[in-house]
Image (cartoon, rainbow, N blue to C red; front, side, top):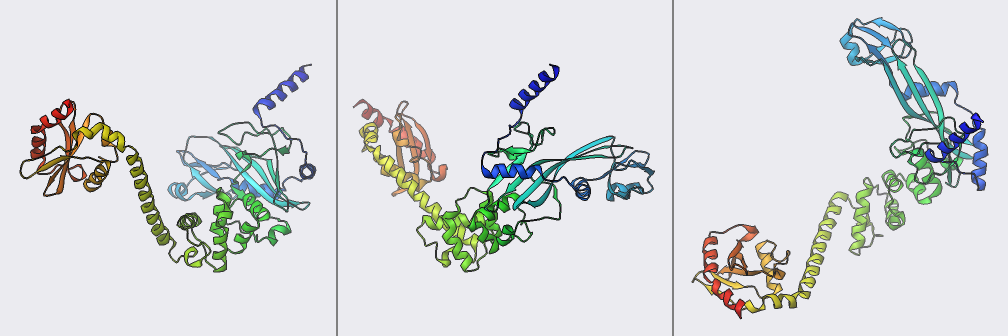
Length: 449
């Protein structure tokens, strides 16, 4: 009864805290599940390689100059303390190259992933092992290694994942239940199975289909699983690999970009032996060309000698186009407000006064607000001053040349602000403000009408 209660608690824990297994249903899953059970463990040579290359190896140094190898536990007196601290040392007992740690910490633990690339019954298999080490001063290091994930890839690029149970954590992916079985697992969005090992066993075995599709042992800084699935499942990515378009292969394997959108242009690059060195910029460039209606099957456009320069040129043109579109949209929106503007400000139309040198007049249309804002480089138009209920905008000029834009409060009949080009005050600023305030009765008269 006690054991039954224990098993029940364990099942409930697994149900709520671990990713559950998936029962094999398809022919592919059943076949992989059967083959996986017959996979042999790591050889002693493979384990030795994993322990040697997955971890850094340390020596512990005391203040008295005693150095202890944290691999075998052997201790000796240091004769070249500074050199050994900087350059490391070699254990005279086990011959291991060591990094010297001048620390009071006596126990050091590390975890890393190790992978083996092999084949089984016509499938490409990538096996991932969780390696750990516990080092304690004056003790021999204790290493452990357990298999946690297998990625099985069929010759057509379809894949399945065989793995142990893993805790459902958003922050930690290496919380494996080592007592669970290696079984088919769901891999939808589970980053835990997309492992980047610290090292891979150098002797790899690959299926003939991979070699046929262009793989020659060079992973081109890509994860083996991603590269294998890409070139087995997509003939276009296979073509990129065979043609040496590695940067473009990286881009389409690591992003959600629609490759079909660029494929006609890619074929032109391949035909003209044009190597794309910055795929992200090149794709942006092709989208710009398409936006302007250019022929992306024309090598003159698709294969620029200076990609950066060509990209920047069309980017500037696109920026100008967008500014024009925005200006046209703003104009249309403003014109829709013309009637409302006239209702608000129409009673003040025609007001104009001068002191003999400076002439001030009310702006009488949204078009005039637009021209004023453009000429004076300020926001009188973009911030829709023409719709502000309690203010009136006037333009101060000398001999027809705009000097400042004036805003008058319709409540106090005083100047709120008067701005020249780029919101700077001019030498006429005080004269303009005084002139407008002097003629405030004109506004008062129109308000009472």
